[in-house]
Structure formats: C-alpha cells, structure tokens
Length: 534
Image 1 (cartoon, rainbow, N blue to C red):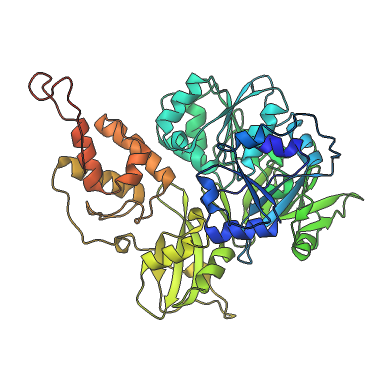
Image 2: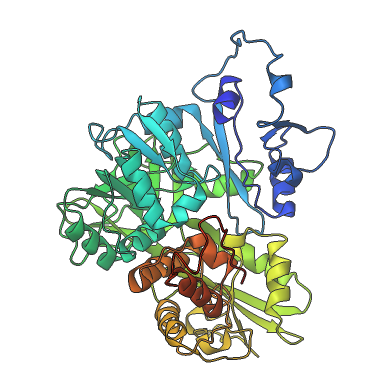
C-alpha cells in the first residue's frame, strides 16, 4: 500500500486503526485525505463520508485489477512530500510532520551509522505509524536489502522473537530503548543471527547496555538519536568498543546532518556546557502541516550557514571532549514512554476537559524496571473513579497516552512564584493501586507468582485477584513476566495469555495445568481433546 501510494505520486499518512475514533477523524480532516487504503477489519474506524474513498487491500482486488497497468506519467521531484507522520502535540491535538523525498533518499544513503556489509536482512519491528518504520522499510529496499516484517504478537514474546531472528537469518534491527532494556532483562540466551542492534528513542540504561555488551560481544550495539522532524536518526554511536562504564553518548552527527548545542540566544556553547540541541543539514522537515506559527517557532533559519534551516529539538545535551554528544533530557514537558513521543500537555489538556476534574497534571515516572510509566495527578470535585477517567481518555487518546496510575490530591504543590511544582508531586503509593479486595496467595505457585509480581511492579503487597495492568503493568513488563515464569516454572506461556488472564490466580491455574503429570494410559484417551476453561 505504501509503495503504491508513492508510485502514484502521492504522500502517505500512516494511521493506526487502534487510535480512538476522534483522533482518527482529526487526522483524516487535518490532512484532507480523499483516499484511504485499509483492510476489511480496520475500515470500520473510518468515517463514512462521500469525499473519502476507502480501498480495502484484502477485499477490493476485483476492482483494483480492472485498472490500467500502464506506467503513470507522474511528475514528482525531490521536494515533493513523501509522508506526513503525526506526533503528540502540546495543544491537545497531534501535529503532522511533513517530510520530503530528498530527506528520505539522503537518510537511506548515509553510510556512517550502520555497517552496510553486515546489513543484509533487516527485521521490520517498528509500527508503520511511527518513523522507526522508515528505517525498516526504506533503508532495506532502497539499498537492495531483504526486509522481514515482524508482527506485534511476536514482538511481545521475546522468546518467539529470538526464534524469528534465527529462522529468517535477520542480522540488523532497530528497536526502542524500552524494548532493548526488556530484551536484556529477559535473559534471552540467544539473539540468533543478529550482527548489529540499533536502539534509541529515550533515555538509556547503562546497566542494560553493559550487560548486552558483555553477553553478546560479537554483536555491534549502535546508540541512535533523532526527532521525527529530522527523519529518524540525526546521530549515531557504535558503543561496542566504547567505555560505557559511566556514559553512553548519542554519538556524532550523520554525514548529511549538522548538530549544534546553543544557549537561549542561539550562541554556540563550548565543550561540557549544557544547552539545547538543534539539528540541521539534510533531513530537516518542511514543517508542521497546517500549523504555520508552530513551524515558524520550531524551524528557523540557521545563523551558522546561510540558506540552511535548523529544527529546535527542545532536547538538552552537551559536547564531550572526544567530539561526541551526551543526551541530558528535555527542557519542556515532552517525554518518551516505551518509544512513543508524548507531549504531557496533550494529555493534560484532554484530562482537564473531563467533567469533575478541577486540576490535573501528568508525569512520566520510572517503574522498577527503569521503564517510564504515565502517572496522572488530579484534584476532583467527586470521588476518584479510575475506570471512568481512563475510559473517557481512551475515547480521545491512544492507549499509550492514557495513565494507568493515579494520585488524587487536595491541592498541588506550588513554587515560590505560584507555579505548579512538578518536582514535589508525591510518588504514587503502590498499595493503593489495587481495585479489588486483597486476597492472599493460597498455595506455593501463587506465592511464587506473588513474589515475581511484587518484584516487577515494585509493590509490597499484591493479592491474587489484582489485575497486572491496573497495578501499572504494561506490554514490556508483560514480556518480562513471561520470561521470568518460563525460567522459574519451566513452562511456556505466551504474552497474549497475560492480557487475557491478568491476575495471579488465573496465571497460577495456567501454570498448574501445564505442570500436570497425566498418565497417558488412564487419564487421557489418545483421541480425546483436552479443554481448559478459566
């Protein structure tokens, strides 16, 4: 579908069908889309409007095959749009980043961030709705490489993921930092045929990096950095032979990019001085679709090279003496959670509009595994009902932008000048997250599972009827849970089972079933089906 759009001379706008209906409607209208490629199942999310033609890629081939097969006389040039990818916006609405063909071609032909000789078979892991997929799809295809697309279910089961690497001889992947950490924490015994792993997207974990390097000495580990506004990667650093005992730089700029660290007046800063990281050179996007004021604010004329443009990332960084760059953090309230770029202001804008919410604030706090999770702080004029809050937010925000941990306050802490003091907002009390009455473990299996859950979720007391995801669990923690269960009990449970059976009681029943010692002659007839119902 994407390649067909490009051959037609159009630009593609990826939309995840799992987005809330209101978000999908906004993106369709903002981008003024008149043709939507979809599937029979996903097209239910598309509004029925006369001006939108929906083509189902799994049902409409009887119509498609009637079209002419002659080459199109399309006039596209390097400055034509290739895609518009939407990212979170601080105003409460997502913003579309416009990227041109010249940006894409320049990026895919850059040869100083990955070893071309080692990269023959690329594992396509990133969702097509995010710019990580641009590396997967176009780096592989425009360089004559093989692309192996990996489905989400396989991605969530790290054991299965390792077997896919081996089966298809995948040698190169790009994954988010959060998934990289989970990969390391899963104690995966083999990464199959992998030769190089690119990771990035949020603050790194030195312990995970060093564990990986010590375990897989033959696999190149490449730390990458870059905003969507500068097409996927702006800098890269091969950490394999770098001393990462105390620091893991985001590296040097790619050959077609420019990196500057400046103060508030756009003056260049010396080595060691902390400032805002600005990116320039090839790859700086055209701007934000239908948002000229925001484009003017974030995309500026370069004061360092006439005719060039810079994108002000809002990221804080500093030069190191060896000429590489250390990423420090954000200067605003934008965060990365499990690889997703999120403007906390967008969540707060929607949250504040809900009935009963007087004041609100959202933070991203690290859980026990070092993965960031969203925490919602609210002042309400009624009793806190987390289910209602989450359901209302889910109607307007993607699942990954909905807090699952809530703290109700009578008043917010303020700074001396009367502003919200985010640093002094209290940590959530894990013991208050449960929505069910506490029930203690009743047998050894439940006791062992309780210890595992308490360790993963960093909560002192968990009952066997408590829901894993209501306690702050998420998909990446679920992969660690499955890996730990596999190690502790020597049984195979898929990640999907955790989503379907999210309590200790239910998981214990699964484990005990798998551990049952059946007498083949007496207990089970060879032709008898075994059914288990929880």
